[in-house]
Structure formats: structure tokens, C-alpha cells
Length: 324
Image (cartoon, rainbow, N blue to C red):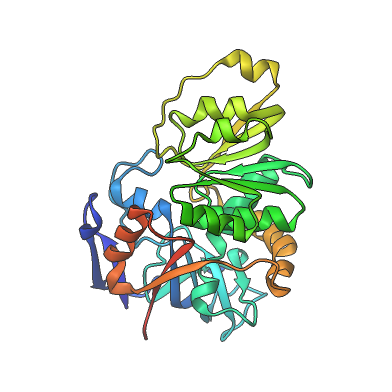
């Protein structure tokens, strides 16, 4: 089969399309014929050797989420059958013509969704649900700020917040992107290149902030939070080191948390997937939520897809398509 591997850590050019054997799968897994694979910021960090503690190039193909058709099932799998259209969260291996997935980490593709749209769902939905609704307990009526509002995570978080009665706010890097966030449901989006988000939003105050910048954003985020506010980190693109006033955390009873989805164990992901399907799949089916698909690339153009993501010119998700 065709697959894209990381030949060594580095720039997008280290991605190479190769021919390799189909993946083996265990009794609790299904083998998926992949038609589309989502591209995520974590893929960039893995390619660069900056994801988690590992500095090495991943040995398996990149790719944390796919959409396709089940072609084989393990002996312990009860829910799925050959021919089912599914999207799935993977540990790795999505940039390929076939991928093995834990049967518990698969979702049915809604009838109105293309494979490309379905490939946008698992990683972002599970990341947002885990961090925003589980870890930070975002509630209806609260103020919620997501930095990078036009990223895959951002567009997902804004729509889900609106669907669950939350008051969403966002930051983005251009006026065009800010307008898009507001059209999507954000009450206000701040262009961080021309305005200070703390100055603009301090009169509102935030109950929950989702951040992947870190660095100098951290003390501003903490100042912006209301008493009992919660700050969650998904990454540290602006720097992993931050200085802030601990007394502010104490006096406002703030909670600081964060997570990475990929390294969590299979049982955790299975429990999370069940919650996501229960709470979010009805929103997909009545079109209260729709993934924002910016552009699709052929599998062999993975390097171009990574360049686009690194440029931050996109709005929403980037997907690789696999021809068979």
C-alpha cells in the first residue's frame, strides 16, 4: 500500500511517499480502507521531533484520524461489519491507504458527510470535548475564549460552545479570520496582531480559556480569568516557559490544566469516544455542527499540506485524500 513516512526529523520535505505492507491488526481492531486522513498540528510537531518527550522521527506513518470503509474485522469486534463507513481516531498510521483502528475508537460517518469531512472529526472533537467539557467543565452561560479561533480546534470549539449555550470568544491573526469566527458564532474575535486581547476582553472576563500558545500569553490569560476560572493548554507554540503571579492563582482559585491526546491509553480514548458520540453525534446529524474543511491534498502532497498548516493561512481543517 501507499504510505507517507518521516525519513528524519526536519522540514516538510522529510515526508516521503513509499510502498509498504498493509498494517497488521489485533482481535479488537478493524482494518480501514482509508479515503481521507486529517492533518493536525500534532503531526507537524511529531515530524519536527517536538511532540511530547521524544526527539526522534516516528517510525510509523503520521496521521491521527481517518475516514474510510471497514474491510476486515478482528475476532473480538462486535459493533462493526465489513462495508461500514467509519471515521476513527488512531495512535498513528493515518497517512496511508489502509489503517488499523481500535474498534472502540471508531464512529459512524453521518449520512450527509463526505469522507473528507468525516476525516476532520475524531481528533478535534475528542480533543475539545476532553479538555473543554471534561477537564475544564465548561457550562452553559459561561464566557469561553479559544486562541487560534480559525484552527481546526478553534472552529470546533466555537461551534460546540455555541451549541451548548456558552458565550464563545476567540483570537485570530487577521481581520478576515476574525470575521469568520464571528460568523461561526463567536461574540467577539480579537485580531492579536493589532489589538491586545487582554485589554479588549478584560471588561467581559473569562470562565474558561483554551490555549496552545503559552509563553507570554499565560500571565494575560490568568489575569483575564474570573474567580474559579480554568486555563487549559493544548500546546506551547509561543514557548513552554512562562512567568506568572502565583498569588493571582491562589486568590482567584484558578485551575491550570492541559493534556495531549495521542499518548493516552486505549481505554481512556474508548471512554472519551463514547461520550463524544453520545453528546456530539446528534449535533452532526441535525447540522448544528459542521467541520470547516479548508483544503484537500493528495496523499503524495503531504509536504505541501504541512507547509500550508505551518503558514497559518488556512481556516479550519486540512485533509489528505487517498486514491485506490
